[in-house]
Image (cartoon, rainbow, N blue to C red; front, side, top):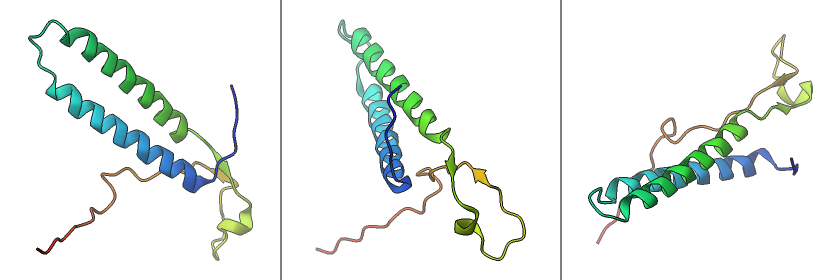
Length: 102
């Protein structure tokens, strides 16, 4: 497997992009008419792509990030030497309200 070096912020951006793609593909999947001859291959293709993206998402979530203790030490007595950082899912983020005035 090929390895690359990323910053955590870059991984967050990649993770958000993957989640957005999955959501769009699921939305597209819901719009495909089921009673057409061409529906079955398209639906299978979209489902396979969703599975690939879900695997990539899982790989990112399972990454371990090792940080020096002094980065985490904020007066706490015990800090783990390594831990897993996980991106915040869009459901946990507060939605931004867009107000448009015409």
